[in-house]
Image 1: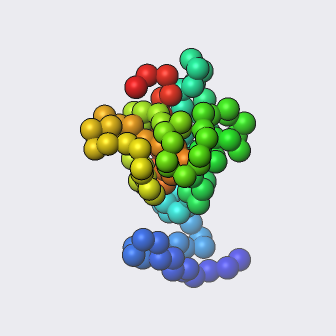
Image 2 (image 1 turned 90 degrees about the horizontal axis):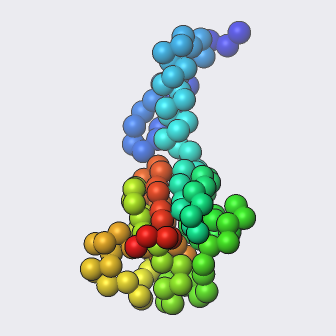
Image 3 (image 1 turned 135 degrees about the horizontal axis):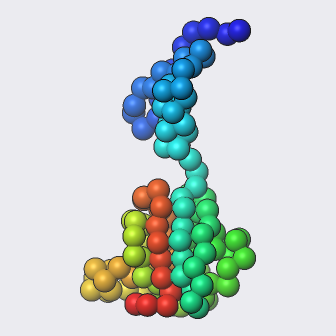
Length: 130
């Protein structure tokens, strides 16, 4: 059996994980793994249906929805037309570019899914009410 420590560095935090873990250490390891997860949980409402999907942080939100088989409205895929606009009800995203939404729209929680990058670990969006 292996014994010793492995050092992990995530987000400038030094984490130690012992090979001989007790249950509390296993929980800590799970928390570290969650921190580095490549996915964001998305709850979305579209046409009266609510769905849960995983969003890979490396791709725009629209692509994650299309990959999950959701027929989300879209057209330009560049942040210029506004077809993919929806309301962000929970969580936080960053718009990589925006040629459509005014500051007032953004303050109301409107986002463009084609150019949205995640900031929080989970989000809730709504296409039906905005």
